[in-house]
Length: 544
Image (cartoon, rainbow, N blue to C red; front, side, top):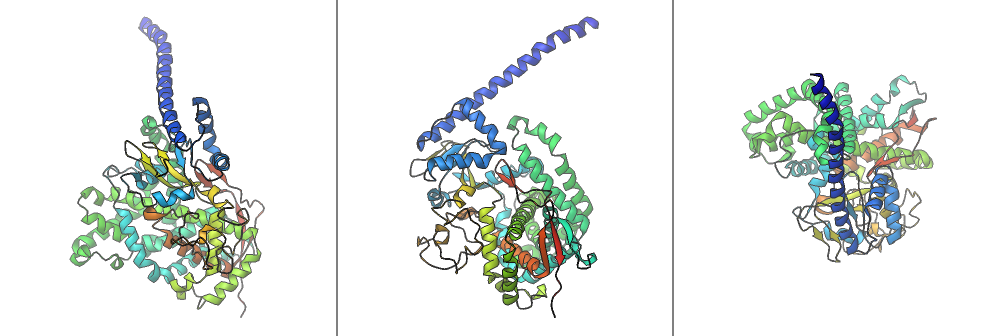
């Protein structure tokens, strides 16, 4: 026995070295293949080729300084030519210019696939496991679009009321007696936005339950964190890594299902299966919330797996989490700009008082009134221009074996990604005058448009003086993406952002706390807000 153990000990050391050497050889082989593809793309637009060493160096840099990497390459090309950079999360990505946007904004998914790029960022196959992820194109975006188109207007008074209640609740103003209180900026906004979104997504049945809201925020945070981290893991090791890293997402999802959603879904299934009229209707307006609309779509889908509760929850949670996270992070940027430009507080307050029928009663706020909050609209749009959630937008995967080639000869090799460097585009003087300056009135009719962001699709390129609404997409304002895969939730998000800002300026005074910080850090393509940043809030006393 002792001799066998000694023999195993003697052999194990060379075996470990041999396995390490084999893995290193495989890694170098794959790296060489990747660099060849990168240089094929680079040659199509005249970029200097990479060596294995230079590619590896920029790959590592891209984890924590991706915007710096983009800025250097954008400046080198003067924003006129595409460039290719390593992306530690998604592989090499070809960054194109605003001129290329009109070419691929309506590209077919069989050539440049948007869904594949979307699922990469959250790594849904691992963070929200579901046996239907490999079943082909997702069916739920179409139904989300239909539901939101018909529900945003009628739901505006309820949404405004819900956000008003959530602010009072999570900022704990009722116990403050009019004094200043300190709150966690992003943490409190996640809960406020979640309660507001719950109104449309799940209804009042559990939408106001604090345990459900806390659980949903925790799940959203875990999915985003695990998804971004898992993007750094090579594909062969994702299964093992996800078991070790993604247990928080699976645990929190199961807690939400067991404690809250399972009973809700089962009751709705019974209602759906027993109601012939509701089962057969195609009118999303008849549903009280998005959960019921999507459940009906899953029930009618030829693939019965979509209707299974756990699989359904993965689909449902994907858009739920995306809506909560992006809206909350965006509004945290709006609050940061408001604190940095305190004179705008009274300007926004005056507009809300002038436009809204009864500013003190959110239940009287209508979608048409919210649409006329032009300064709110411009302030939010300018905040989004200067503080993006992601540094690379309109990401698409070239899924054809031969890749994708633009009319000007720009090559996207097979399974490489194409995208637009958003922050660099939004700070380019060719498109925005004084691009580095925050101008809260930039997108109002009072501001003379000198940039492409005001151009309509007919190519007037800023020759008119109409304002650019918050939800407008153009080749130089791409926060929402553009074309057939522009953000389908942008009209809901814009409504929530404007309602939340109006509620804030009408009912509260704000100022920075001691540890307030608007400094963000990058993690791959994401622009991550400071989780420890805090602000001070005081409820306003209205004059009689």
